[in-house]
Length: 137
Image 1 (tube, helix red, strand yellow):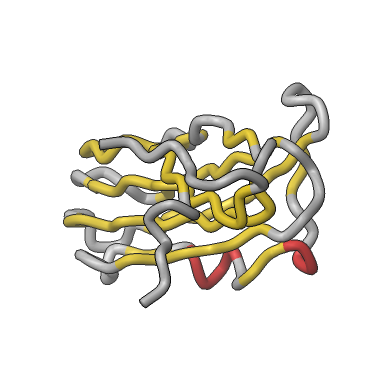
Image 2 (cartoon, rainbow, N blue to C red):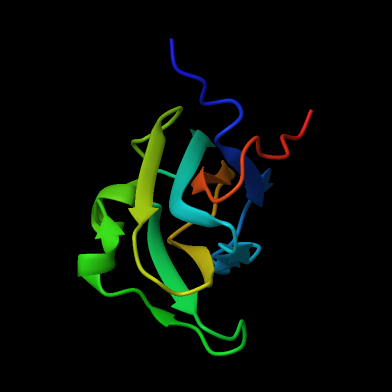
């Protein structure tokens, strides 16, 4: 069996919390130094509003100041497939990044959300330049 425990590192970028508005949630910046792979895992809980939508945007930056939307050819999967609606209770979505910029972040923007929506996002970094990685306990 292969060891992924020592070759992956997880970073919480959006804490799971109930939201009741349409404010964009910008995730904590992920610094890719020392890693050659990034995947976001979006854990969706209960979405109470009957017509809410949640749009995913992935951005990258060379300097951690100026962020731009990642070109589709640097995404593994699509932002549309990672986005979700009120009908996606208790599912998981994911999207990967294979670009060359050092900094990355994910934003989820709700629309028509007047109920309670719960979701959280974890960044999973892989292909470390040095292993084993530092794993959180």
